[in-house]
Length: 134
Image 1 (cartoon, one colour):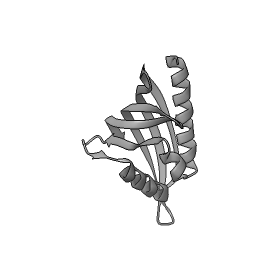
Image 2: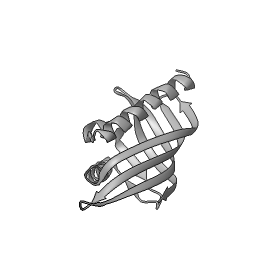
Image 3: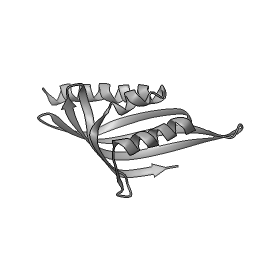
Image 4: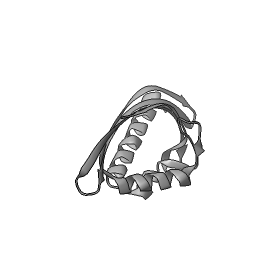
């Protein structure tokens, strides 16, 4: 499979993740991640799939609206693995009480290691390289 074909498949996976997140479909969203996920946050703390699912569920409860986009900085395909560096820009609107709304803007650069599974591409490792929240 060519790098271009893998990039197209990963783009489709990213679109599915965005749609699942907007729809607050935790099962569909978490289907993007390997059961053996290793997610290293900016502070060096490493979490697994179960903790990520808990964090995402909390986001679903707090976030009223969200949008995200990404730019692929690089893609390396090695057999059934793909490593991409992504720059992501996301915004999230949260509501506190009835009248107070807050819009968050998150800019993140990360390294994502994907593996091809029987159900398509899943993320096995994430390393957050840089993150700004404002």
